[in-house]
Image (cartoon, rainbow, N blue to C red):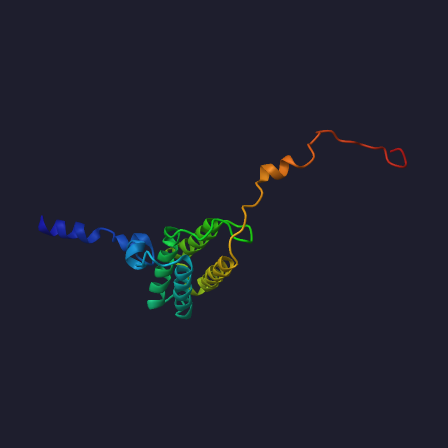
Length: 172
């Protein structure tokens, strides 16, 4: 009986093997302990530093830990109140933050699927540029909410649903 029990335990799959190349990380608050007093700009600056380190280390060894930390930071960006809801460029601050989060999540998902880290370095660079661009946009200040689409459409000519067909110059 003891031997059968030991064999059965040895045949079980390991949870890490089922999850892919890298194990599931602990919660974001443990990986990226951020002070509540940190501004959005400070959090984005920290994100940029972690991404730079992950990229410099080519997403291997400790650099992979830096990428996991960067992803955890993106999970915590919405915890801080944005200084204004709309950027001067006419884009929602929350939407931009969610885009950063989605890209970071995608990079980590690719790593878990076994994608070679080398193939993801361009994605890490794109995430780093997006974080930097958002920091610049935040410095430009807030703006007004763009005109809603229904208001834009209400101001256009109504669709009559008719088609005017002419015979042309030759009568065809």
